Image (cartoon, rainbow, N blue to C red; front, side, top):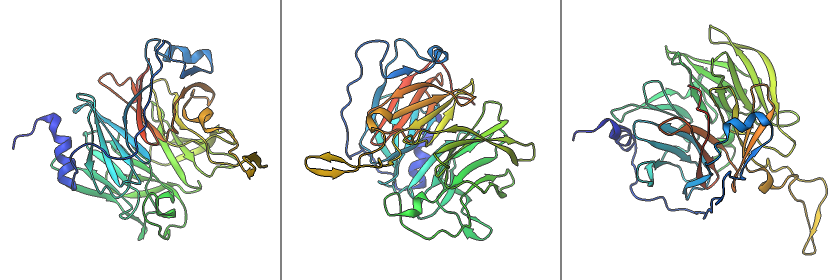
Length: 362
C-alpha cells in the first residue's frame, strides 16, 4: 500500500494500536452559534484584546460526543485535530476536510496531553495504566520516551510541550491514579509531583519539584520563560513563570497569574505576542453557606459554571484582557488551521473552534 504524506498520521495511529473506525458514539450536545457579528461570546476585558477579535468570526462547535475532552493537537499535513477523550480511553480525530469525527486510537492508555514534535510525530502523555511518555513514529511503531524516574514509576503524565532544541517537557501530577474515572487508582511511587525534561540524549531530569500537581505548561515565544499551572496552588490555582537557562535548568520562580477563588486554570497555549490563552471554568469550590432548593439545604458552587466556562486570555504581564464564553468547561486548547489562527478548544463533551487575529507561538 502506498501512503500519501497526508495519510501517514492515520496509518501510524492505526498501526500503533487497535484503531476503531466509524463515528464517535457518546453523549453529544447541540450547539447554536450566535447569529450576529461580532459574536457576544467573545468578550473584551481590556481594549488591548480588541485587535485579536475577528469581527466576523463566531464560536463553532465542530464535534461532540466525548466524556472529558483534553490534549488537542493540530497536524497541518492532514488538516486534523487529535483530542483525547480520557474516560473513554481513546484519542479522537476531527478532520477539517470533511468534518468527520472518528476514533483513531483505542485503547489509548487514558492519554491526556498530546503534542507534535519538530519532525511531525505525535508525542503523548499516557495518563494511566502505562503511565509513560510515548512517541508514535511515522511507520506506526510506538517509542517509549519515559516511564520511570530514579527507578520508580511516573505518577500520571498530564501535559507536554516540545522545545525548539527537541527537548521534551511534561508535567506529572496524580490525577490519572487518584481514582477510577481517568484511569485506574494506584499508589504513587514518586516523592513529589514534578515537571520533567527529556534531553535529546534521552536523559530524564526533574526540573521542578516543588509544585503540588503541576498541570498545563507552555513556553513564551522566545522560550526564555516556562509557564506552569499549579493545580493545588495557594490560595488559588496559579501559573508560575520560570526563567529557562541555557543548560536546561530553570530559576527565578515568579507567580504570573492567580486565579480567582472560583476560577480553574488547566491547559493553555501562548500566541505570537506572548498572550496566554487558558482553559477556564469552575474549580468546584463550594459556598460557605447552603441555600434553600425546593425545601432542601444545598451547598452551591462559589461561582456559577455558566459564568466561568470558556477561555480566559491574559497578557504577558498576567492581566486578563479577553474571555471566550463557552457552554462547557474548557480543559485545554491549541492553535491550528492552515494559517495557525484557528483556536481549537477541548471543552468537556465537545471540541469548539474560533478564528482569531493571531497565531500560536512556534
